[in-house]
Image (cartoon, rainbow, N blue to C red; front, side, top):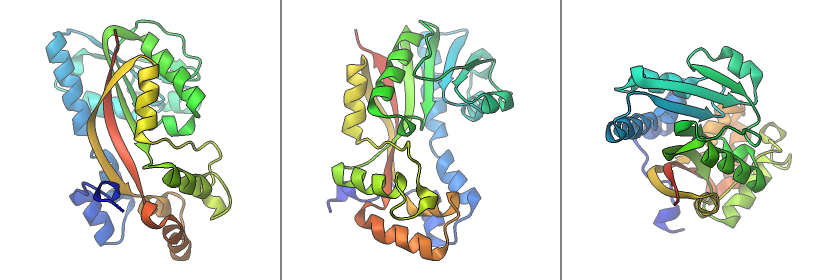
Length: 251
């Protein structure tokens, strides 16, 4: 296996989680590592465009957690007007941080030229390729011409990696606890190509790979024996690639 396919960029949070018995807080710390990049990109965008008010939409951020982080940490939090768009009404009801809430399936959202920034965090893996394209079309339409699309997503390395994940996470073959029938896995190349097709030019802001089994063990309450079975099955593919990208509309 080449170095590019190994777990990369393991920061001190991940090292800590691997060296000692992991806790929910440690995994939360790993999950949080990406937010400073969000604040930086958003604040630089506001500065560059000299915006007195910035319209931001969170596609699929039902409970408002991302918007809450942004409002708490952005230099220009007083300029942010945030809209959350989600198909889960219960999550929207719990959302107290967004200025507006829209109950809509992301594949059906029909807003047009409304937002300076669209954010979407770890949503694509719940949709197949056709649905992903519809969501991207809807985001493209919802963005102002000079707007940007910030997208966190996870990806696999290649077709072998993808097939391993589908067996583990979209079937009962290894452990029924892990079966999520709607799981869909792309390579980074797949995702970039789809964004080009939808009319976006995309760059990577942050990229790293994360060991997978630690997360699965806690999230799905696996026993030590079940965890070992997962690790043995994943083998060299015991990781997932994570990226934050920024996309602009193509002319």
